[in-house]
Length: 247
Figure 1: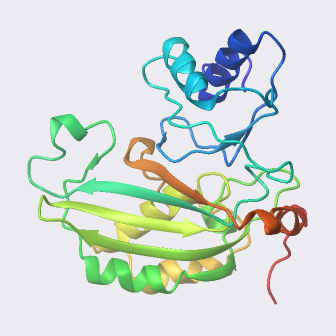
Figure 2: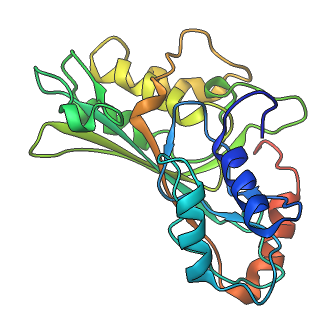
């Protein structure tokens, strides 16, 4: 929720309040930058126990704007927390490398890239970024927030249609981290930087100004993973503990 600004959280909360006629506090799995898409976002709220999930999905479809949809409503244990119980988040970044750019029907979620893209160099640099590190060089710092993250997947593939897809997964992401990773690696792929340069950024303890931030529209949150029900509370307790930089 952001005062005076249209957000997905605000639209969904407003629709829930209209349906239930009581205040609703919504907790989401994670924030996305303005302009970033999400087709796998997860949120939780305390709702009446006798609520019919299918009815709620249909009711929300009538109230929500056309660019916001709720695909399912599911009862969960009281220990479930959409944010703190999450094990990892999955993103995809789409880059069209064809001479004509992105297909018109995918222009809203695909970056048109007018440069060559060496996937071998990009994947070599990506492999060096995997693991638990302080990603301060790739993050917009927030007061009191850690920039230590466990990057579990960062791989690039090119489809027959000429679209390159970067698959990025981590336990969590700090502000602008995915877009900064993509921006840095695109510079590697167009031979403006060496692969070692991207990896060396992990030794920097602050935001680096020469790391390009890729445009938001190419990025989509595609999924969030959670543990079994009997491990939800333990996972939330672990996540709430402040991470410290690895030695």
